[in-house]
Each structure stands twice: as structure tokens, then as C-alpha cells.
Image (tube, rainbow, N blue to C red; front, top):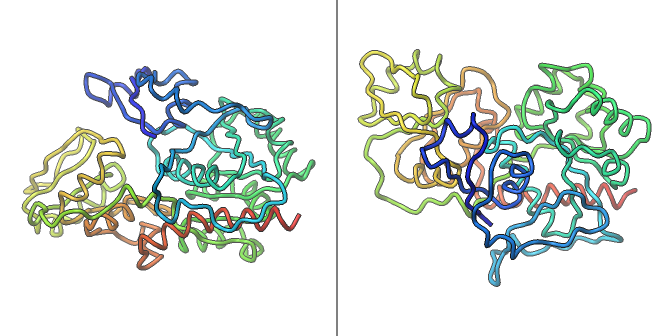
Length: 360
């Protein structure tokens, strides 16, 4: 469910229009409201309040699938002997970051399938959630406090609570490879978001992690990204993440000259190369991106450095906007992925977690 919020955080508000209004999923809005970053102003959401169960201290409320729902929202044949308690560990620093959006989608599916999820962030850290869990799923966690890391490592390596490492980028191997080697080696399972992502991580951490590592594309709710038009701006290109591509763009003038209309999102300090005319528009909420993908023929994304996945590459393709990537877009290493395969990946994630829990 999407709710309307007023942004309170000063730094975030600077990047928005004068009204400072954003639309967020309910679970995310509640998390950000608890951190003092937004105020929920759509009071109708209270009708979806849930009773706190014995395990949960932080509720993730799934979007109501409605009376009629696509096949992929229907529960698959999961066989639970008991309700699986999952401690979901992650940073929550970028409200619309790729990993955060991915995690919201994955968590929503997990809730619908009957998993009992409790969210553990730097702001809601609680060791009792970790020790009571049947399994811990560790996402990006670089913004916790030092004492949190000490507790976390004790829970994983001393108390031996089973865990899965769900990795979204290269920070583990770039910033703390030694700690990452232990974490990825002792996990029950490592989940990477592209073949390139997995192979580059194994190159740094060692072959010992390959046997219990898999790849799943970054989680995307494909219902939101649909090709619904044949009426696109002719000879047009959208550059949605110029901050990642500044150096490459300056050396790729010949490619850009082929387009009659070039639109850059969200960087008013960007100066186009000589002879290139660009329209610069403000940053957009994720809900607005499908409309933009359906306006343009091409989406340009050639990052200056390697990234593990890059969800905008998959989003654009789903909307019929042809990506122009380079080898630094990790999702390119998948080859072709259909909407059906992306949807199946959401369920494959939880089937893997289910198998691990049933074995124990």
C-alpha cells in the first residue's frame, strides 16, 4: 500500500519540491516516521494496522493483494512444521536506494508466504530478535554502531544462530574483506544479485564459498514496470543516474550525439559535454519511473565503476526502454531475463530459506 508522507528530514527535503510530499510504501513510511524523517499524513492507513505477535517488535505490513491477484502472489506449496522466525538485518539509510526497494519487495513476499519477519536496523537493534530467530538474513549492514557489530558476530559465531548473507554490492570485499571472508564462509547460504557479483566476490574471498552460493536478480515487483505504450519520444534517451556515469559520459560524446532529446535526472550541477544539449529534471520517486521509461526510447547507464546489479537496467527493459549499458552494470551478466524469471526469483529466494530451515 502506498501512503502520502510529509518529509521532515532537512537534507532530504532540500532535494524535493516546495511541498516536501512523497509517496511511500506503508512499511517503509512507518520505519522512516519512527526515525523522525517523515510524517504520515494519509491517515487512512490505520485501517491496515496489525496486532503485534509474540516474536515481532517491528512490523512489516505487506501490501494487501486484493480479492483478485496474479498467480505469483498466491502462496506456493511451502511445507512448514512451524512458522519460521526471520531476523532481517539491514541498513535503512537511503529511502529509495536499490537495496532498500529490493528488500521491501522480498519482505512483502515473505510475509505473504507466512514467514514471521522482524526488521533489525541501526535504529531498532535488539539482540533478543537475533537470538530468538530461526534464521538471520544479513543484508547491507555498514551503518550499525561498533557495539552492534560485536553483538552480531557473537550471535553468528559463538551462539551459532544460522544465517544467510544476502549481498547487494561490493562494499564487503572493498571495505572489510577479512571479516567478509569469515561471514561468507560460515553462512548457510550466500545470495548474490548477478553472476558477475558472485564471481568477483569469489575471486577476492576464495573458492570455499562457491559451493553454498547462488545468484538471484535483484528483487523487482514486475507489476510496477510494464511496457504500455508505442508512443515514445523519437530518438530520445533518458540518463537516470548521471552521478554514477559522469566520467564515462564525457568520453562518450559520439553516442550522445545520435540522440535528438537527452534528459538527465537529478543533478543540477551536471555540465553537458560541448555540443550536447540536455534537459535536467529533478530526482523522481520510484513510482514515477515507469512513466519516464515509457516516454523514452533508450535508457543510458554506463557507470564509471563496477556495480553488482543496477536495478534501473532491469526496470527500463521491463518498460520497453532499451538500455545502453557497459560492462560495469552487473545485471548485464545475466543475459536476457524475462518478467516471469524475475517474478520466479522472488519465490526462489524464500524456497531456499525454507529448505534451509526444514533441514535443521
